[in-house]
Amino acid sequence: AQSVTQPDIHITVSEGASLELRCNYSYGATPYLFWYVQSPGQGLQLLLKYFSGDTLVQGIKGFEAEFKRSQSSFNLRKPSVLWSDAAEYFCAVGAAGGSYIPTFGRGTSLIVHP
Amino acid sequence: NAGVTQTPKFRILKIGQSMTLQCAQDMNHNYMYWYRQDPGMGLKLIYYSVGAGITDKGEVPNGYNVSRSTTEYFPLRLELAAPSQTSVYFCASSYEGSYEQYFGPGTRLTVT
Image (cartoon, rainbow over all chains, first blue to last red; front, side):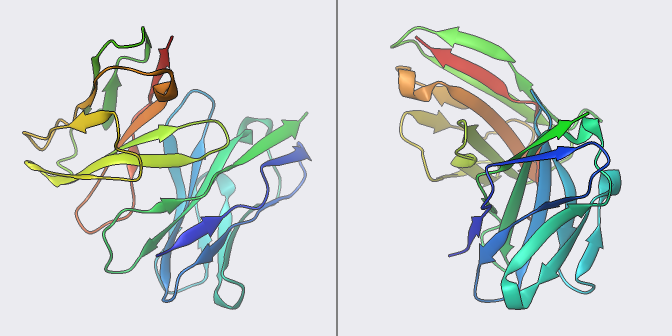
């Protein structure tokens, strides 16, 4: 079965600084990988996804993520964080040909100082 | 196109009461899911459905029931509410064969 680890519970950055949120997964074959964002009081919204092909994927709101098979990682990045990016971020993994029920990480809370 | 809608947004229940959380989607998605979210614990899958008339248990089904009579609706029933069911509940849906989920805005439930 697949699993996801988000090692950082909280990340604090200053507005305008770069950001990297870590995600490590455990799965034997090539996984399907996702990042979701949850703004306060809202549901989750898909930021980006990786199924196959180019390992650097672009998402909405200026985010990108890179799939690194050798490190079993799918880290989320943004070059310059906005105050409005403060939210909870969830990494999720799915197994190709599986039950189509993704496994979610516990989330990383992003705090942005103005 | 409203996406996934949930009602109510907030609810306070007394211990032992029952209620139904409503979920609807207008995207003709076959798959629907119920999650609960507790602080620092991520999302826990309660029940899911792969189509009308087909439901199955997730990770934390105890104390809950679901039904799916149509593609659009997937209500979650709480019987005999307990304080441990205090949580935020999210409904989600997806296309058949896709892991990409669309989430509703959530229902914040407090049981006292």
